[in-house]
Image (cartoon, rainbow, N blue to C red):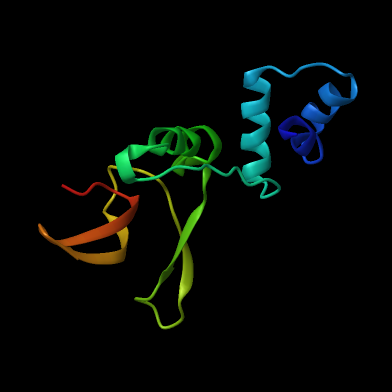
Length: 123
């Protein structure tokens, strides 16, 4: 069923499927990655944080199927000017820090802040 679903959104797997061949694991992973990045396919992982069931496979799926930060074009708005203008943000750890805090959580160890780093390094 997985190969058939991939064949509907990926030409390379469609060719393999139509020729009644069995695709290799690498071909399937590459097809899932291409289709996921093109927003044509959504891999779904099942698991539970309780006893870490499936967490490692989820993290491996993020690495295998989602684009790396270097493959994504990030833009921000320069608010220091009168009219906000879009500015490209390169993924470079040597440039000044550009990050976004997207969640605050009070826990038993104090406040925990989740953030996404777009550029630079946080020490």
